[in-house]
Every structure is written in C-alpha cells, then in structure tokens.
Image (spheres, rainbow, N blue to C red):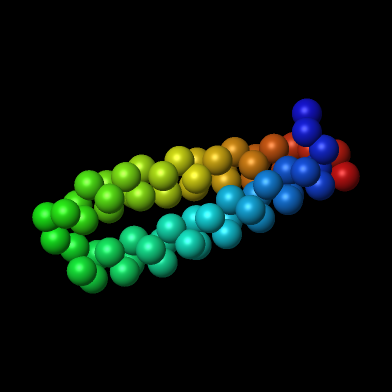
Length: 66
C-alpha cells in the first residue's frame, strides 16, 4: 500500500485538478455553442474520473495506518 503521505499528497493534487476543471466547465457552460459541446463532454468525463480517483484515495487514506 502506498505511504499515507503520498496518498494525501495525490489527493490534494487531484482536488486541485477537480477545482480547475469545475471552473473551466462553468466558463464553457456560460458560452456553450456547437463547437464547445465536445469539449464540455470531454471535460465532464475527466471530472468524473478525477472525482472517482479522489474517492478511492480517501478510502485508501482512511484504511492506512497512521
């Protein structure tokens, strides 16, 4: 199992990425047009992946000793 500190650091990095993507999506939703729909869908998929990873990291942190 990964070191608890490594898990926490990765979780913080993922959280920053989630926040960045959420801001980017909000900006795109405000100006969404035909050309932006694919980009919005791609970013939403990435956001879902990062949120799932963050959840897995939280579970691993909770299970790790320390």
